[in-house]
Image 1 (cartoon, helix red, strand yellow):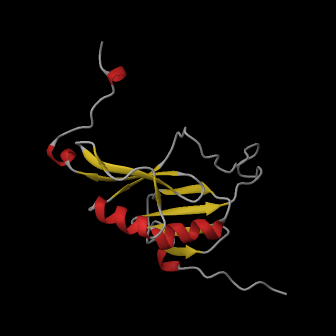
Image 2 (tube, one colour; image 1 turned 180 degrees about the vertical axis):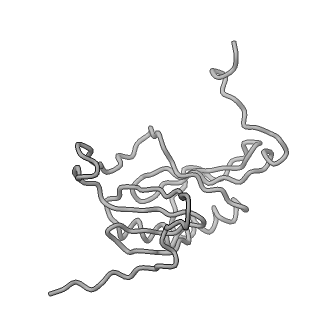
Image 3 (cartoon, one colour; image 1 turned 60 degrees about the vertical axis):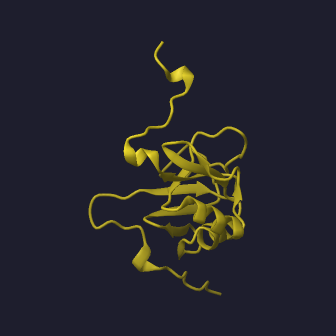
Length: 159
C-alpha cells in the first residue's frame, strides 16, 4: 500500500529566490505536540506536517524532527533530543509589538511562562518553554527605542 503524498504548503516553503534565509531546526520528542504548540499557540502556519515538520512563524521557520544517528551528510554526528534543565546555551527570541497581549493570548492557549513580563528598562521581556522544554524569550523593545541599553552585569564592567 502506498502512503498518501504529504500535504505541502508550497507558497510558504523556506526557499529564497537568491541569497539565503535563516530557519531554526529543533529536535522534538513528539512532532505532533510541537507542531500544535508552534501553530495553534503561537499562530504559525504549518508548511509541512512531518519528516521534517515545518512551521512558518512570522518571518521565519521552525523545522522539527526527532533526533537521529549520523547520516552521510553529517558523518559521526548524532542529533540528540534536547535535555531541558536550568542551563541552556541557545534559545529562540521572539520580538513582539505588544508583549502583554501576547502573554495573555499565549498563556490562555496553554503556553507555560517562567514569569510574567518584566520591565528591564531597555525592553519588557519574559520567557516560556515549548513542549520539549526549549526556552523562548518574548520581548518588546521599549527603552532601547530611545537609546537605553540593557544594564551590564557587575562582572562585565571594567575593573
